[in-house]
Structures are given as C-alpha cells and as structure tokens.
Length: 126
Image (cartoon, rainbow, N blue to C red; front, top):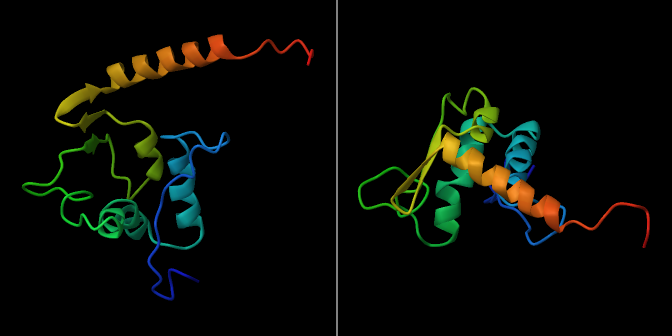
C-alpha cells in the first residue's frame, strides 16, 4: 500500500541485529518487496538509486555513470528476470578493486571458519 501510495521506500538491513546477517539478509528483503507486489525493476531502483537519493548523494551512488562511485556487481544473469542471480555474483568492483567469484567464495569460507571457531561448544551446558 505504501508503494502504491507513492511513499518513498528504502531497502536495507537493521544490523547489528544478531538475526540479520549483513550482505545476506538484503536478498530476503528484496524478495519480500517483490512478494508484496512491487515490480522487480522498481525494487532494484529502490535498493540503488533511491537509497542514494535518500542520502542526498543522487547521481553518485546507485547508477552507472561518469563520475559516479564505481562499486558494481557483475552477474551471470538479469536480476529483473531472477533475483537469485544476485546471490551468486561473478564478481564485484569495490573502491576500484576487482574481486572475482573465486576470491569472494574464499573470503566467505574463511569467514565461516572464523565464526565456527568462535562459537561456544553446543554440549548443552550453560
């Protein structure tokens, strides 16, 4: 109803909520917006260009344009056809540095190992 009424919307996580994992929860949020009836292309705009507009940095973020910040996601498909392609980037460009899918996968594996090593034993003791 908010979207239909023209209310500006934003997409983003409520971190540091322990049940919201940065970088992962946004995929569920994008899908929830689509499930609520908002067209996919509008959801992608809300998550990119509209976020920049809210931050008063329109044209600097959320667009592919000369002089805009060059953080990009390279995908193997069109997210307008299937949002799940966002979960499997072929690579990302962040602050002028390229990270291909192998580098991203390795970084996630190392993070999983670090987190698994810091969890308390689940032996039932409290």
